Length: 162
Image 1 (cartoon, rainbow, N blue to C red):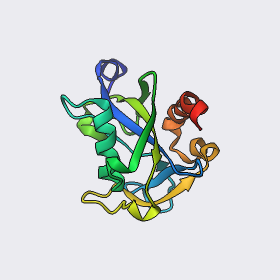
Image 2: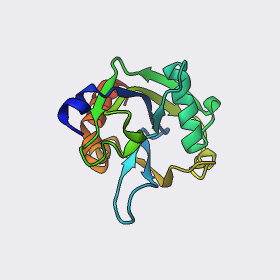
Image 3: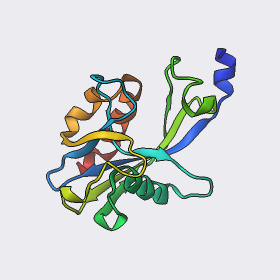
Image 4: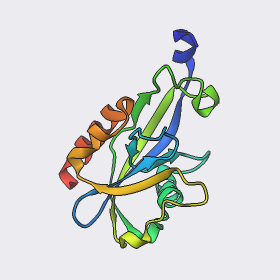
C-alpha cells in the first residue's frame, strides 16, 4: 500500500480493559496468534460492534476473552480520550482484511471482584494461551512495540486510581 492509500484508511473502533485485582496488579494475557517463543502480552481489548456503546463493548469483550462476567467487575474509570495507534507496515493489509490503518481505543479501568477461578481464557474462540497478574510497571516493556505508547497513555490516564 502507498502512504496515500494508508492515510485514507480509517481507524477501527475498539475498547480496552485494564482489569485490576485486589492487590493492584493488572490482568495480562499472552496472545495465541504469536509464534512460539515470542512474547506478546496484552490487556483485553476488542472491536466495538455497530451501534454498540463503548462501555457495553468493554464488558462484552472482557467476558468473551476472559470469561469474566459483568457482575464480577466494578468500573472505576473511563479514559478521557480515544487513543489511536497505527499498525506497523508489515501488518497493514494482513489484519482486518486491510480495512483499517490501526485502532482508535476507549479504555476502561475495572476492579475484579471475583476469584482467579472465575477467569477462563479457554473460551469459545480463545485469543490467549496463558494469563497472569502483572505489576503496572511491567506492562509497557512486555507489550508489542507498536502498542507501547498506547499502554503508557493508558497508565498515565488511570494513574490516580492505580
